[in-house]
Length: 64
Image (tube, rainbow, N blue to C red; front, side, top):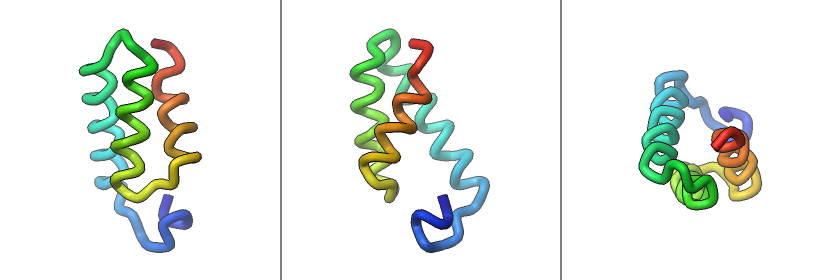
């Protein structure tokens, strides 16, 4: 993540983003499509490009 953003990212920040993703998924469960959309919106808002954000959202919701 640090390489993609061209700046250091602390492990606590990464942990926070993952926790937030879990909260978003929980709100939208069992609708995986809505969860993915909300996750992409959230992850792009913290600086991740849309394509990696979509891949991350797919991976986080694959079992929904």
